[in-house]
Image (cartoon, rainbow, N blue to C red; front, side, top):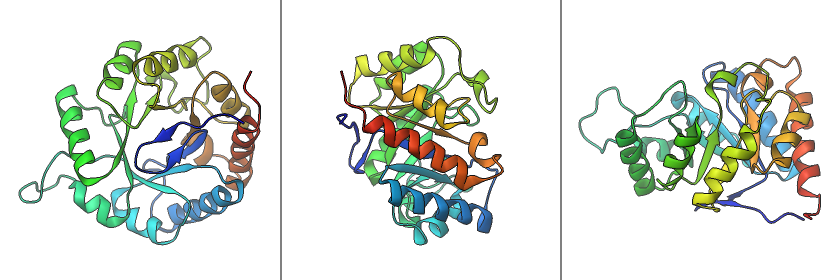
Length: 238
């Protein structure tokens, strides 16, 4: 069996799956995917990150058991002024246990990212931070996130994975800074075979958005991805 990596303070370890509906789903349709993912996460006994729109976090948290409910963004504000911004404490109260930051669709400056990560730590939210280039992966790893999503922006949503050594290279960069950081590689992932490739190249987790959301049978694609993770976890290391 492979030795798991862990997301600090959340009991989350790799290999893992991330299901990230972004803004494709909300309300009852989002809840349907969350319940299905929760069922399969429990069946396969695989750690699973599930993101949701802020307004849906409590809904998902109240109807699932085996998911790490994750916000898609937050702001580094404290209770008080901050009209229109996302208060970290409100995410925790809604049932979130982690937050994704610096996604390509919601990038942050290094100063804002650093401040936001500090607020996340203060309220007990695990941080899952996105990075694109080698330089970004190196710099952000030094900020000490619990996990990183390394993905070339050009591959997001395309269904086509990077054909070069991006996965191995960026995973190695992050682990070279801090081996305890979980590395998730998911850009262009759309099949179980993609998940298997990512894990075989050193990443701690995979998953995605359009590869799941746009698939005609959510159960089929999730089972395919979970099976790939289960098979990888059961493979002895050499």
